[in-house]
Length: 370
Image 1 (tube, rainbow, N blue to C red):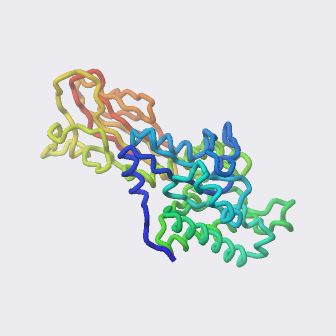
Image 2 (cartoon, one colour):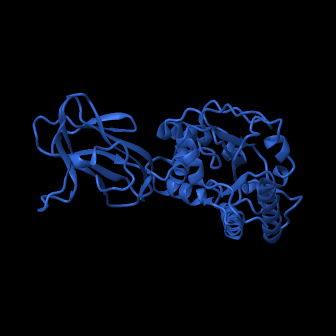
Image 3 (cartoon, rainbow, N blue to C red):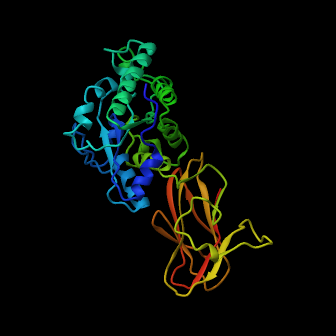
């Protein structure tokens, strides 16, 4: 058994910051392929995916924005209706020398949803567990044999609390519980055995289904496949694991100039640290610069992983010469006073940016989410 890591998520991030391609692929079923997303085109073995709204493409766009690297690639290697026992037979065709993905450096291994329906292999839960674990282990070992770093994904959550009436006798394991308690447990065990990184997509997407303000009809209209909104959310989940800059919040959180993961900030010597506190901000910027050009003075990537919407407030000083404004995922929001309610943030990823406006005044304290 190979247990030494070849690459980590942080290795990928560092490669991307250097402007390198460092491709990562996601290998799985239709929930990876992007079935039912807008303009979905089913994948063909060995051919680059063209589906624009699958999570892999959305993730690539987010990462390119965050790293300022238009070369990096995220590969979509999802195949509708497929299972792990099939996957082990097509590894060379999908990732070998003749494939569009032959330069892949890391592969995220999915599968598990359709596998429970395979009567050829799995007559019961124990057979499903043993067989599925063996096939995923074969994929892991193949990756290592090719000097490719494997990692694991649990499955996207589905709405299958009980078997659909017409399938009760033919597919008795067609429930979400079978996926989560067998296939996903297998992946968690293999992650521990091999020392693999794992993204528990099932836990995140279950929370998205249960607690976001978006109706299930819009997230997962056929009860099995996430649509555009769901894939965008999944891209955010994966971004939060791949980008070490991400600030994950599930309740009251302050983001200011003492936060360790902010970017695009002001010089250290522009900061003020008052001896006597007037509010909850211990470090802020209240400075006059030499010009009046619009300047970015703080940015942060924030992943909201809460069980309700969180209110985002922004704070600045009371100077009338201040023209500070913020952008939330590119949308401008003016700061109308010392405290401004910006928005209610649902579950998912957000890019927060703060600018001076056309002013010499550099004036900002921070954000509070609660």
